[in-house]
Image (cartoon, rainbow, N blue to C red; front, side, top):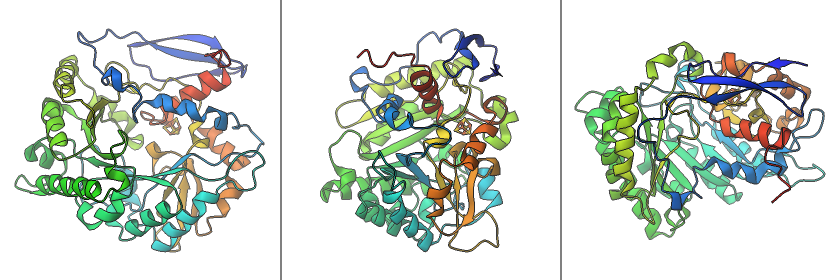
Length: 431
Ligand code: SF4
């Protein structure tokens, strides 16, 4: 029987051992930190069925029950595509800083269109499931709209009936208004409510006007989408532009003002989450720890912000992925998320074919060769050969969550896999 060490070692956590069906003894972390005086409200309770609620993952449990060594593996529901490893900003906390400095390349138009045409067919020939990826998150890497082919890529995905979400810094939205209006959502990373804070965090001089340009770009996009009855402009509560706000020390006092600003320029919601250390800088985690005073200030600010919550505008904080101190909360022992999603990125080596791409398995460890399944290949059909292969399982086997991983974006995926699929902790047939 193996003993699997788990999670983080903060003083706020104690552990007890649980015997799992998979015959492993797993230490489960319990967060025993004192709650802040006023608990942080995650969202208005009448909006609990919202796009940021990770329990939507339960809808995919039947697909993930097929994650079995030696068996064919279904295609992911969602993949991420990074069109560019280049950026026009330099944010303090950039989670792609490593790959931006080591691989300054972009995916070619040919590579992007081949990917777009492959995704609906990924996994075809499987005996008992429908092939195809259902959604693509276009992110980075770097800034995705710096790649001149990103608009054509979005158009092709939409033609292929794949839903698209885009994460952008917003500076170039005006070049892609029509393509972006066809997306389900566009998340714009702003992280401030004033030009002064924005410029300080984004590596810009104090008199820079980018903040105003981004707000104007968003207002134009939301107006265009609404007037053209495009997907992005529909009244659906999950569709639209999201004002993204990473909490990072000095910007917590601007939370309520940012919510007001987001509503005024036509955003469908504002979404907060704490910044964290990156995989290549894990030893700097303490530099982004939040004090009890900062967490109390956030509670006060989010309460003010939530007074703006109404039909047509939502205020969301994703605290269920963190502990009460906003620290990483990796409550699982092994990583099965590497079988649930994938990341397409630009080629790794300088001399790789210009139409090649990398297929990686974790967005939190971009640029880490240990998480790459295909490197600098041109033929997308190779994916069907390696997906679920012994090489894929070898990547999973080599992951040491506690030792190598930062805060895990896929923490809910991994927790649900262990608790609901492996251990049946919910006794799921008793509905
Ligand atoms: S950070 Fe990446 S590799 Fe680590 S557990 Fe999460 S998904 Fe897996």
